[in-house]
Structure formats: structure tokens, C-alpha cells
Length: 368
Ligand code: ATP
Image (cartoon, rainbow, N blue to C red; front, top):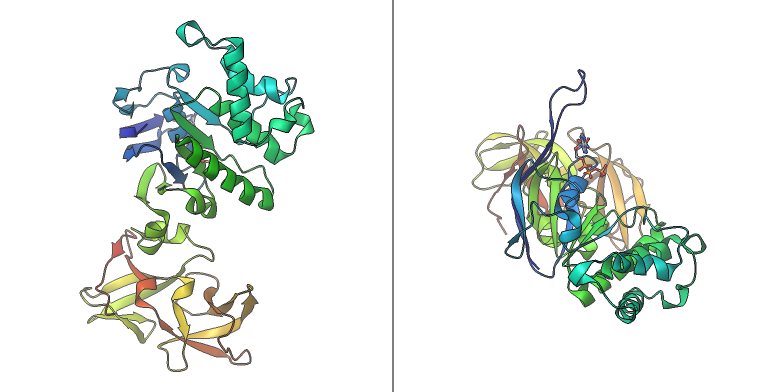
């Protein structure tokens, strides 16, 4: 089921004299979510992710714009008539019911033509439990389950009604690091098996990048960029997106362009054909630095962090906007750890320029 968002907008009124102006939580969101895909809705706290999800499931009505599921306009439909399965961060299981009863619950509330026989309900419950691999836990209460198991029950409960659309709001936030990794792979598997169009909300870029077909990066209610995770990482539309994606984060310097040369401080560090003279922000991905004794970018050497296969060289520069510069290089690269400075040449495809005022990307022709 494709989902179409047309100019979707949600404003909330100002709450007090101190906060008189309205909050635009979602601002003219236009997007067609392709059928059967997993979309990661990503952004910092307060950017409008949950509001978008609540608009999709019908818990909130938009101030403007519309939502279509396939060709059906669902903007005015109440949540129970949208065919949406929802999974929340806190699982929201009924503590007094067993796993089986929790999963069964949404089916018992079906009315009219949707009503199912007892046998059909039991069959659906079994199928959902099998899908999330909790068949052996059916008679336990939620308090007798681990966080990861509880989240599986919540997913089974959302799937049991065979929803047209699955919405997941920070479903992994309450899990520890190892379980998060495992559960996110599970969600991917379940989504691929069921082929239900799924929207997954998270503020964790690693999570969104690793399982999404497409990511939507939001900031202050405004969509910044939509694309395949790798494409957005490799080709960010603006400084916000460049800074939001990537661990370690992108290194940002203030620089300027003069006669087709990018300068950081006094030194020309890269040829940037086609860019007019101006002050810029320069973003360099950690993998964009190549240690080279004759490299044009000279930084103060601070140390080395071992990361296993790779190492991170930590350095500094007077024009760096980050407290430390982190460059990722292979562990075999020889580094003189007694030196006061380290010089780098730069990989042009890993260097991005941004307008100083707006943060918009400035593209240059790659000399390579
Ligand atoms: P988080 O990751 O912290 O959950 P989010 O990206 O999901 O954040 P939303 O909850 O969608 O953000 O909130 C978007 C903006 O709308 C925020 O500025 C928030 O304060 C505001 N907002 C959300 N709900 C309401 C409400 N009921 N009344 C007033 N303002 C609201």
C-alpha cells in the first residue's frame, strides 16, 4: 500500500503568554511512500517525527493537507478505520493479560463485517506469534518477559489485524545496545516477510540507516532530504543533514573559496572548480582524510583512538568547528604518535561545501 502525503501540515496553538506563537510541528510535508518499503523518519527531538506518525494513524488531524493510503483519502477517517498497526516505545501491553490474550485483544474488538470466528482469531494469533518468534511464550504475562520479548509481543499485536500500514514510534529505545541491534534486524526481517509499508520513527541515525529502504531527515517540522540511506550520506543536501548522519560525525571547518581554491586558514586544501569566491563551511567526512607528509591540511596532533580494524586520528585546527577532528584510517597506516602536527590530503568526494548563512550545499565539479 503506497502512502501519499500532500502538503501535510500540523500546527499547535501557543500555550501561554510566554509562548504565544503557534508551533509548526509538521510543515508542508510532501512525499509518496512506495508500496512495501520501510521508511525511517529521522531527526532530533522535537523535529515532528511523532506528530507525523500520529497524523498517519489518525490520532491527530492535520491543520492542512491530506493523507492517501493507495488511492483512498484517509485524512478524515478515525484511527480504527485506517487499517494501521502501531507499535510504541513503551510497548503498551496489558499487564494482566497473557501474551496470547494481548495479541488476541485487537481481534476481539472487531465488529460487523470484520468480526472473526474464534478459530480464525486463534489462527491469526498463532501466525503473528510465529512471525515474531514468541510461540513458546504465549502463556506468560508481560512482566515475565525481557524488553526485547515484550517488543516482539507489541509487534505481533500490531500485525494480527493484518494492517495496511505499520507504524513504529521509537520501538527500540527501551532496549540495551545488543538487543537494539538484534531487534532492529528482526523488524527488518518481519517487514520484508510481510511486505507491509512501514514507517519507523527514530532519532538514532545508525538505526534508521541500517534498516530503511529510504530515510526522511526532518528538522523543525521541515523535511530536509529524502533518499536511500547511502545516497543521503554521500550527497547531503545541507549542513544539517551532513552533521546529522555519520559516526564519528562529519568534521566542519570554516573556510573560504578564492579563485577556485578552497582555503582552510591560509592554506589552499582543495581545487573546487565552478565555485564563486565566498566564505563557506567545509564538511569533511572522517574517511576523507589521507595522512600525507606533504598534505595541504596541517592539524595539531592530539592522539589515536583504536577502533579495531580502523583507527581514529584525533587532531585539531584553529578553523575547526568541532572540538576535535576525527579521521578514520586503516590500522596499518603508520602514524608518528610523537609528532606535534599531522598533515592530510583530502578525498574530494568526501568534502562538501555549504553556504555560510543558509547551510545549503554548494556543489563543485569533482576534479577526479
Ligand atoms: P521526540 O523525538 O522528542 O519525540 P519528535 O520529533 O517526535 O520529538 P514531536 O513530538 O512531533 O517531535 O513534536 C514536534 C513539535 O511540536 C515540538 O516542538 C513539540 O513541542 C510540539 N508539540 C507536539 N505535540 C504538541 C501539543 N500537543 N501541543 C503543543 N505542541 C506540541
